Image (cartoon, rainbow over all chains, first blue to last red; front, side, top):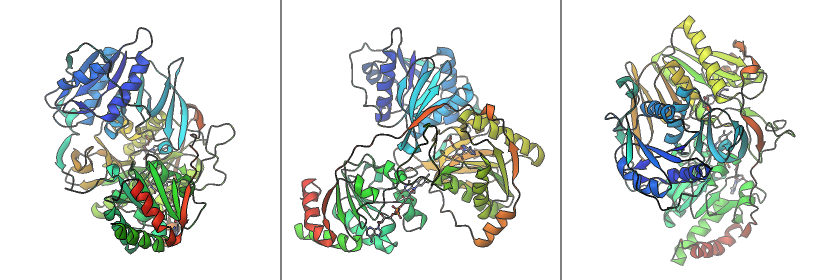
Length: 322
Length: 256
Ligand SMILES: Cc1cc2nc3c(=O)[nH]c(=O)nc-3n(C[C@H](O)[C@H](O)[C@H](O)COP(=O)(O)OP(=O)(O)OC[C@H]3O[C@@H](n4cnc5c(N)ncnc54)[C@H](O)[C@@H]3O)c2cc1C
Ligand SMILES: Nc1ncnc2c1ncn2[C@@H]1O[C@H](COP(=O)(O)O)[C@@H](O)[C@H]1O
């Protein structure tokens, strides 16, 4: 049996969970194998529809009245107990922060290895996986030993599962053996996101600035272009380390992953740790004095020149074009 | 507050990664070494907590002899003591790493009493295993918050703040002793001063030799992903390129 750990919002599966189901389904296609899923939290009952349509035969809900908010220790312990009871050959978590966290807790309790950010699975003796290192700029082929293989799926390594016909399955409650102490780590309060701010991860246009911008003041032109295009500003680590911009705007391995239609990268060299955060951009326009900078050679379009003269000209031309 | 912070020496890759001929490691002949930005922030956080609340700070790494350099970098910004769990340079798997770190923590705590707080990075820069912190916390039966971007020390607890999946922040208040893994952005690390560096150079590093047989790496081989060649279209040089950029914006539907 293959068990997929699902994340959902009030019953609606998130995209990464659908991607994990795609891998789960391909592994469950082996003779005699079955696909099962585990959910938790409010709205769990509503996941049965979409999960069955994704080929899931049985849906387990980790059910405990104290599980009203995210509580990673309790969930990890509950998941470990479910794994021990059901004995799956593999458990697949999503590549989200929470997915990685819950699987790590279960793995630690079960004393089993865990392969994070997997892009390919090859069942056999032993199982082998391909997984991401360095945020995806390096791949590792690795063994995944043990009677139960625990792994998380790298975001966007698989297409989301498409619906297949299936008969409705009920959600089966699984009551884990938990104490109040297992809930010592749980969300105690929430601070809502700022109203109206364009999130870097979701922005359609990102105007990026790096060391070439030269100063905090130098960002005025990038801010202006971003506003004109309805986008937002993203930066390199050099910029946040210098204190020119807050870390919330950093793009890359230890910052945010962006996926805009256009990434306008100004004065950024294109180090691999930066590029892994910009890999999902549909197009890149590099503005750089160095024609050979990796950002330029990886770009779709480029303007060679000093951003401090190129940007004002672009801003003026955009204004004139309106 | 006695604070322990765990860091990992990794090559400072910048351009294209080159592998050794046997595909077992990154060719580091022309590279410097560093630690993950998350861990740099964990070190800074440890120093700030001890500055604000008193106590002592310790940095620990599992790695080769040369990882002493990264321990000294941490001591140069204010960490007082250092522990090197020395390997022969081979890779250690996450389970083995966590277990060796737990043994070292237990040994140290038996002498000096418990660490009130153990800080780690959210994930190591190279392996990105996302699990050593959780494994350490579970083995020690201490609460852990992963991925913290804010940390506040209270009476007997810490409050950790992290990004919520849909934006905004989640707050967790957990009892001490506790484990927290942090992300870059929690603070802006200071640069080491010259006197700080000089002091760090003279400090002693407590070294424990590990048995290489315990390493248990899962790696078979490494592979650099194939990049799709992009034929870049140069729109022009300098400000004269502006009209072609506007044309591009229009084509992409960014302006009317
Ligand atoms: C583990 C690890 C994680 C990391 N995570 C991240 C991360 O998340 N995000 C990140 O960005 N970095 C990250 N880094 C750092 C990364 O390796 C690079 O150091 C950083 O991205 C370089 O920033 P930069 O391109 O702004 O600066 P530089 O590399 O110095 O490049 C500056 C560029 O600007 C150009 N330029 C200069 N002046 C002008 C001008 N007037 N007009 C036009 N162009 C000009 C230059 O030709 C050059 O290409 C990480 C590093 C490590 C080791
Ligand atoms: N070899 C090591 N020595 C010390 N700390 C480590 C080591 N490996 C991992 N860690 C710590 O555990 C965190 C998470 O690592 P990982 O689970 O490997 O992604 C890192 O950011 C470090 O703080």
